[in-house]
Image 1 (tube, rainbow, N blue to C red):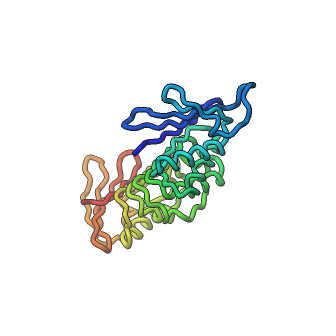
Image 2 (image 1 turned 45 degrees about the vertical axis):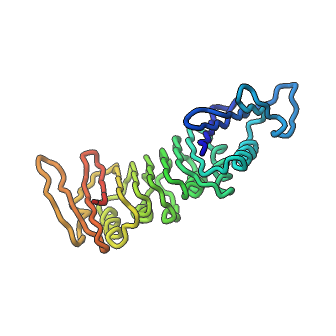
Image 3 (image 1 turned 180 degrees about the vertical axis):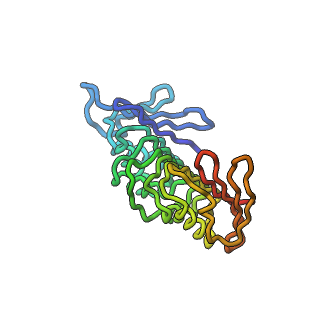
Length: 268
């Protein structure tokens, strides 16, 4: 088993790095441009070994990374690929992610650290990440966004820091993710009630849902019409805590924290 790490440092140099037991054993550099003396030749011919490091002089283009990833997969049989993306222009990383999926390789963890400013990029990111085990997105920078495939997500963890666009129906569709954290939410108690009613029928694989609201939430109003409900009244100004039992006998707690965060948690 080898851990392959892909770095995109800047516009001038990037590289693949292969580690075993956290020790680097091989590195493939991708240079932005050839020196004047070098000519465009096959990338396999351009590789040379220097002090245990495989160095490859090549233009920094998506196709080159795709070819090297394919080459490494032939050698190591890659199990999964994880991504950390911190760039104002993530187009390069998106193309590489889509290539990984096209090769039927698994995507592990995705950490997308920049706001997504176009609906097209948001759609592509969510589509390509649906098989990931862990997805963290800084946020989508718009108030309305339609994505109808959250029901395909099976993640261990999903975190979207800015999710002002998300609806109750989309939150319900995330029930097969184990742990979900959503921030900057704008819907109210009626939508929370709708989510709870749907989870009563089918909670899926959900272990914990955290929703941080950008509006005032009165949690008692969200409990209207729920059956099999237990309540422990809060004291000293704290919110009451609620327990509910789903139709298939699973017990969930519902609490509102002081930070305007509503937590729905499966009790073991």
